[in-house]
Length: 235
Length: 382
Image 1 (cartoon, rainbow over the protein chains, first blue to last red):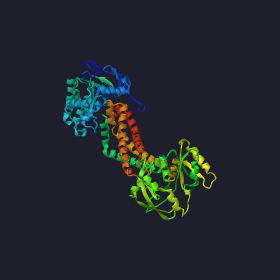
Image 2: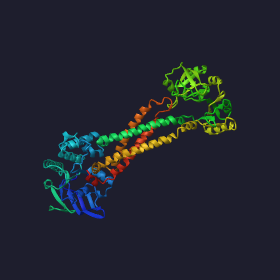
Image 3: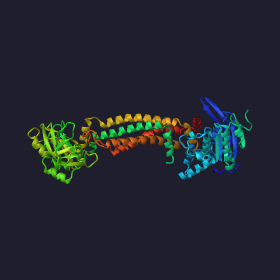
Image 4: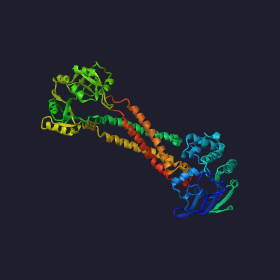
């Protein structure tokens, strides 16, 4: 798989996926016989009530977890069959994560946070700095590069999180409630940014959200209810 | 190296905790350095002992004397290259606190037997020409600010309660760093002549034998003892190293004592640093989950946490060893009781090894914990 997926081709193909957790003697079925396809260049919003399995599905697509049954193909590659080591390498090359609570390293500056994924590449220091500068410029935070997360606003921290997610130019951006911890204004700025990444840079984005205002920015919305996908909102 | 800033930033996350942990490691390694120096002072003679030298003493005790006439008989034993003798003088210079060893020797034989004692040709010539001449080691000369030409009065409670006057004709250096440069040596002929008014004439303290082949040392030791069996002065012959060890054992099993103290100290430090590292990992499970999410492998995280614990241990260990080195650089702090007191490069290397081991041990369990984290679970704990 290359980082340049052709627009319109199926990038994410999930077939017959089940995910079950064990809690004591109880089996909890989070996802049941789920099928989903996401085309390259698509901006998909994944909605559903709490506990519907949205984050679990996102984790399966991002290679953070494995399905109990079924297959997860990203760009034609069966990631559910990769070893832990290969899966880590695959994530480093193909996935950019954006988290609800930004998940920045508090001990590193914005610039160093964005640089983190590049430490796993063979780029030298100068090349890493160049990539970091580009990513920070794309999210409009060049002037805050040397600031620590605690000195940044929530919106700025999330923009650093997005810069970290895109700095390796991944195939797929996975956003877990990216505006969930932000006020409306800051949330809008983040959604504008994601939309720009999708429209202007062709990034495929899957975004988990509760917020209809956020999902309205996506090119398609699917709903998850009790481990099943529907096209209609869950009442 | 590209991960160095990450390691460093994590260590500085809780500055006070990191500082206190480093300080506790520093204290442990200062103690390690000082105990190594004390151990060296007490048992160092064993390591510096010549492999080709035997010590012959009275079978009952070192304080029992042996006849001077034994020298010629020992010299006749096959395999013996050279025989010299020394006698405990036990003199006091001005004050009993000013302890240092003095023994009468036969200069030519003694210098030939002990090549580790370095004396200039002029001083050697002067010693041979001066009946009351004495040479003293650099350490003691500096301690009492003596210089060649000085007259040194020494009172001996053993040899007649009189004051002996020696003329300082040379100051010797040690060939090795650990060579003892505290003793004073003076001429046996002068000693024997003056003491004849008292007791012990014709008797000496102990003999040193140099053998032609070190491999035959044990056999020659047996032959020497057999030679004097059933005589009024039976002997006990042993390698110089074993003799030195016997002296050291009078204090106790130094190595065991040192190992015991250090074992207790390092066990405590292991718990302190281990607790710090565990806490450091526990409080950032979520961050470790993020690192895994962006592509850090299990092994990568293991290495990262171990790098943190090793940096902590090496910083503390390095500072501690450096401080210990500074504290021991001045040599014997007792002014003569511990002439070989110094921190050897070998012990510093052992210290560095200990620091690395401490880092690995304290980091291992937290590192394994980090390695085994399930990413999805860890991210929930951000």
